[in-house]
Image (cartoon, rainbow, N blue to C red; front, side, top):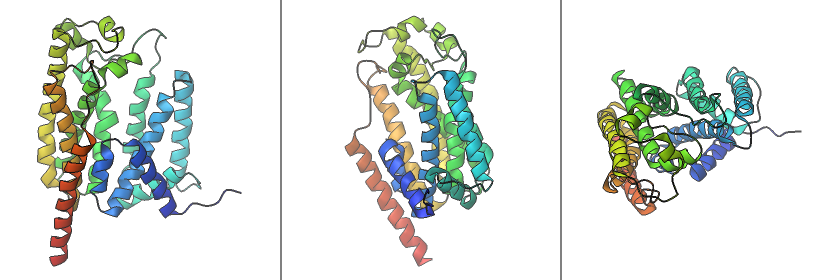
Length: 306
């Protein structure tokens, strides 16, 4: 007989998943008060489960879609009060109630993961024709996460929602720039085809390049264009910061500082993301986190004085 799992145990499982898998996000999670940190970790674990189902390349696309649909159906049953022993579902159900997170946002998040499972010929890469098409993908896989997060962070001004959407776009474009080579090896090119054409870059050159081959002048110009778009969306993150609850601001600041730092490193490498994988070193992430933790401690001290 399966033993019932307590809410504390469920959140512990989610925190463990986040600590193991969330390379950049976890540093921001640490800078949150515990109830908000638990909720963010639960949402991350939910996202991770969806991504793992979608990315299991040992299965056909059709089978992955089927399993995702089954998993989503199981979640909906649990969200409506059904019994479950799944620690992630237990934690997410509590987090959505505690922070009034609409279930429609989680449905959109799952829809984003299935965009990489569109039926296509086995030899055809996944592509996006225009930047508008790419924006829709980024919205589903990243902006929706931002819209969930601000509900956990706390906000009252409706303007925060559009700013959170655009901050998510900035993060996802940064990920796309970093992962161009890795994605191409998996048959995925997220750079819009219209931009490839404008910069005389072919799909073939991205999909069939020798590993470690430096970026060409045209490829650098292409990636720089996407980088400029990302930089523009980071301006929304700066505007978002004062709109969320004071005790959550250090966490958002940490996250933006790390991601924007990654974009700056890509720019300093003149957008050559092929010769080596560009990352923000762990020691720098820890330095950023330390500032965030001091900031959070000061906020707590002030709140006790009031």
